[in-house]
Length: 552
Image (tube, rainbow, N blue to C red; front, side, top):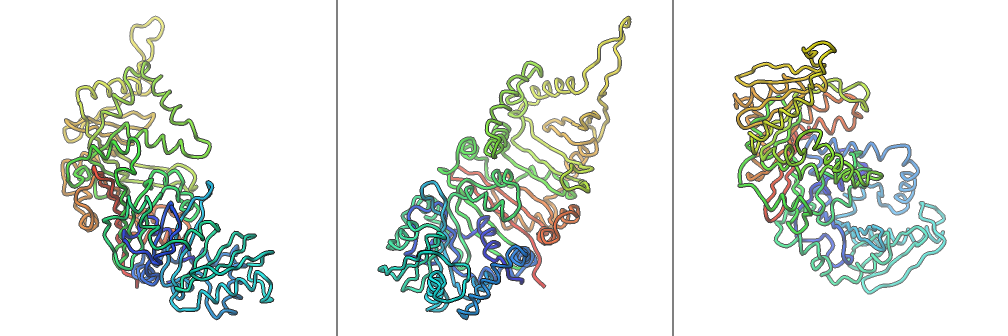
């Protein structure tokens, strides 16, 4: 495995899924009131996990490429100088696995600013002392060699557990403890609160009370708990994923665990009920009966990307999307503007878009993309996309009336020509065809087709997209749920799912040829990805299963 920004890869993985355990790597060094805690009890176990599969190899190589970039050349040279002087390899990958046995990373807010503290347990006694001594020497100029730590002032003092070295000019604060622990923080108050810990700070904190008690242990695997969504900006900068997508995908707060093997990566996040806010809380409290996501049976096996839920709430979905957009910089007020526009449209449409349309759909809903041809320019819309939505209807009689009103809006009859009682043909005529006993209707502008069955509303980007859904409804053996990949992922997940998102990394990587090569390799190695969520009265649980291949 290529070694590089190992910590970045590790943090990315463990934020999405660490292990819900009750053991810290370094007990007795927890700061007061952390927002989040990431605990890695065995750095080599993570390395072995990444080494075991093609997905882990690709992910590690992706961050290794970043570490070798020209913009970090000076940092690499400085670390090489320090490494030679200390006799310790300080390059991130080697240092974490060869020198650090375990570590805890805390996020703590002080005066409105997020600060970090890392509490590391070293593999060999004396390593922490050598590192702190070298930092002190360079900061004071005693070493004669600058490794990038030089500062005007250094504060050094003995503390009951060991000694501290502070470089206030750089906001660098170290503590070397008699226990062999090495602590680093970006804030003096945070470090000193960790030094005052008697071993109870983390386990009496509000977040551990909510997330940690009763959680199962996974020996040697990372775990995390706390305000996950607050780390979205960090994840966006590390992964390049859109902040909007992360804001919608990440739970606000969660306890998380990770496990990695040669054929799969498993990620699990749990958010207790008291941490679920607003409409999402109402959604969770009205939990559906235990069952597999039967709506997924309406997705064809050829689907590139698909989503199915047993508990769709149209108003909750609309409010969630608008709320996420509202939280983006410069987009405050979007939700109110859209709500106002929807209210004004009621008289024009003849129905209420929120209560008569969005609220009428469900509780079962599936969305899938069966064909996709990306544009040559990655920032342009795709050249072709075949997408389909299949939704249950709560009141078919009422909803049929709404569909008729929509049809009139899509293809309004023009006024009759002067001197003639015969109206001119519509500019956007509705075309009708039959398929498997179901009437499919469509218009050219916008390109959309739709159909109503006895229990479902189906809408697609073309008549053939609607046919994709009707075919699998009449022939369930062609469903995604009958494929070996889907069955393998479902077997490892909670059988009482509320929703599931599924896609093939191989297919997506082959389609999006403009992906940077290092990311294309990562996506392709995720042969099949299933994200299953279960909302229950006690909370929300999300399981991510990534099927991959053993490393060669």
